[in-house]
Image (cartoon, rainbow, N blue to C red):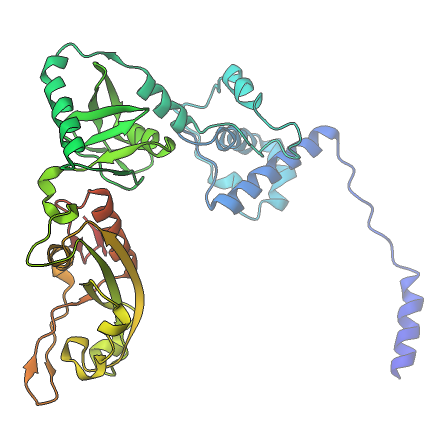
Length: 391
């Protein structure tokens, strides 16, 4: 049979096709399906089923309650099972102790009042703040009178005098920066001193946290969580970390042995064909500090055993001011000491050289170290090669 005959036969048979009738569903069933599709979309976006917990977004908590109710109703299974390609209905574990069984509808209504009227989807929150952020703001605002402020007032006066004299400095607060006992900050326009820190624990999100006693320079104090203080500092655009003068003259204007008070941290990658280099090329970095041009510094790399007798490429650079270059380089090398490459290179005359500035460390860990140096939280930090991160 020719192709033309097959086409004609297909046209004839098409007349006998019976169109599938759309399934008629009640308005209630349509709402159930639409609600389940919202949950499925959340899972696709978030990468996990919706969870309970006051630290989570209000809609995630609502989806968690809705999913439990759908999963525990056999009638809903008959309707939703055919479309449950993510296995959500069978993976729900209903507990009696979650904190969302009775969501505060008044609080939800108050949140929703701030929704933009032009939003096309109720989940497009424009102004609603996360619960954790609200709690942080509340804990910072709720302060008590510091009964023993006479113990702390001299500390605040000394800090201010050290700031005026340039012994201390203020730097932007980074969200990932550590908060330790004795740390000093400026938040909500006031100096804050971490006077006490409780035992460190893991919160509901498996992050380290601790209860703090924070004293403010206006004679008040607050008992709040470390994470709440971090959120408050991060939310306040004018927040600052007050540096510790005991960190040494790394960021001071003083110079040592003619060292200039500015420099560039450079991170290089080798193009050497040595097996140890080729096998770890993306992980092996040379970390150094210079006061001049990095390009000039690496100009004769292939003739210099310090550069493994091979050309190098510049991965990244960081420019810092008011530093002592010698101490900065020593500090960086001490931080990454555990990842230092042990290698022997022969120079042009056959003499053995042992380069000391190459480290098997990922770039993000170097970024982290530089940020900690900038915000003053580098004290006591070292690189742990087991977890490939600073600790």
